[in-house]
Image (cartoon, rainbow, N blue to C red; front, top):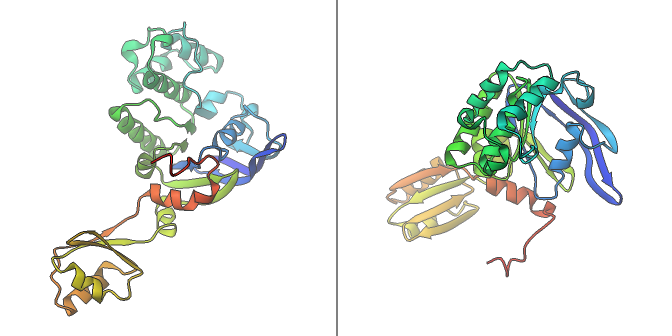
Length: 304
């Protein structure tokens, strides 16, 4: 697994990462979240030995990335899909990586097929779209069949089919017992993919918890109530923290469970057509939690 302990990075007077400690465990997809400028990419670069930490440690399988005898067999990573020679074919890009890590040539064809690039493997990467380069980067990450995978914004440039595919791939990798760390700004996909969440803001750890616990802890439960007697029901729900109308026959209630709302409606003779508990999305929970940690925020008047 990945273990980060007291990880800190300074760029002059700027504290980009501030005493981070967390673990990415095998058998799980761990989502790595934070606003722009939170320090996510800097953290990933230190985990992968691309940036030196000012203090603290980051290890993969118990040792720093730089000391891995065959790095691609220890951890596969996608940070920059454009980091390929445009004049080199996809096949020869992967072949060069395989040769440097003692990986058999046959593995190149296997990963090209796994990411759906087998038909374009002999094309120069300079002709690839962003989505194709993302797939090639994922193929490179899978090349050494590593127990740990790190992906920074792997969904960029992918079409809907590609997004569904990467979601399935992440889940499959975790089910095989690998540790998967994935950062993304697509909250809807993160909600469908991740088991665990690491959330940072301004370089500091904000949350380290399961997806389910994160949403429950950082958002209120809501119940959607549809009734032709909405105003009458509103008068009965005096214990509710908040009741708001979505339209003339629909209320959204926070602060009471569905069973309690149904009981009050029955006691008051209110006819109910729908009573549905509604889970607040990961996006709303994330926005509420990180509101004070946003580094770059548009003016609300000009962004309307």
